[in-house]
Structures are given as structure tokens and as C-alpha cells.
Image (cartoon, rainbow, N blue to C red; front, top):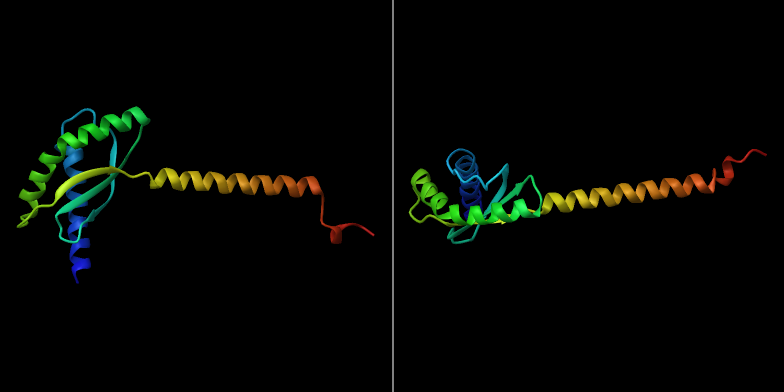
Length: 131
């Protein structure tokens, strides 16, 4: 039962943090950001907020610094809105799963294209040859 409670709280934290970052955190270094998911420790003492952004490595670094600075404000607002006895510490982590997924998809496309090129170069299979 603990897992389902933690998941519900994590979903609530995710929605609230996404709203806060979009509408209340006024730091211009936080660009177009998407909160992908939130995980909570077993004791609900820490929330790991995973996010992605549009931009290069420099933009990612600026956003990470801005999020670190905003974490106390975000935690305070989460405490106010969720009315929890103990509010989890908020830590932000860049979610590189999307980049990894794109890399795997690109590799699979390259493999398929290479296989197709080899098959075209080898010609039709032997059983398709005219007699």
C-alpha cells in the first residue's frame, strides 16, 4: 500500500511543480521545461523531479543552476498547496532518457538502412532467379 500512496503523492508533486515552474517561478534562465516524472524516497523525505528542456548543453547548465536556486521556493509552495505533515526536499535532475531513446532509434534506423543496402547489393535471392 505504501507504494501506491507514494505514487499518488509523486503524481501530485509532478503536477504542482510543473505548474509552479510554468507560472510562478520568474527566473528567465528556466526556459521551455517539461517535468517528465517524480520519484519519492520510501520515507517521502525527498522528491527527485526529472525534467527535460529544449536547448543545448549551455542552456541545460543555466537551467540546472536556476532550478537549484528555485528549489526552496518550490518546496515551500508544495508544502502550502499539499498540506503535508512533512514536505519532501525537492531536487531536480535532467532526464536524459529521451535523448537515449532517440539515439537507440537512430542506431536502429542506421542498421535497417545498412541491411537494406547490403541486400540490394547482393541481388535477388537464388530462388528468385529465372531458369
